[in-house]
Image (spheres, rainbow, N blue to C red):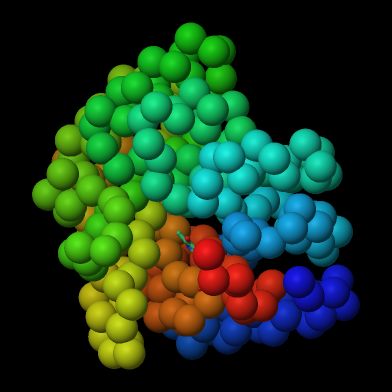
Length: 232
Ligand SMILES: *Cc1c(COP(=O)(O)O)cnc(C)c1O
């Protein structure tokens, strides 16, 4: 685990990369947020983010957030970025403020029902496998309308946009295509359903510049901030 001083140096470097990427494509730096990904790191990682002034952290497992969140500063927002099994829907709604990984109509309906029963309102993203990667979760591009349609009737869930992960590849064109497809999917859904989906969560440590050029509003960054993760 890095020290807080190292973390601030890394944060400034990542924010610098983001600002430069915004400038290169004529976007305002305030149009993209940095979501620090604290998964596998001790709970202090979330405290670092809070101390630095970042508003939220990303975690990919419900159980890990359930353990870390009570030890972490109140007022930090927790966002689920990993695959959610439907039998953990209730715990996920309780442990997270934002769910970025809603990837099926069944899960969407279940989350909506449970959130309503619990009296909770949550921001959600539809995760789309826009890189068509068999190793990644997310609904297929063709299923995205059905997932959105399942979310829209639930007033307990506020759909704000889409999320994608690019396939692992040495070719930057693969990430670019994945992100461009996600944006196109978002544009189509906005037209078809007459809704606003302003958020595109795409880009990580290795490909955030490409994601910003393609319209990302949220880059999810782990290793560039906290160092490499232990191999699990
Ligand atoms: C781990 C993870 C990240 C962060 O990846 P880095 O390459 O370490 O920046 C981003 N998004 C998701 C969904 C992740 O699981």
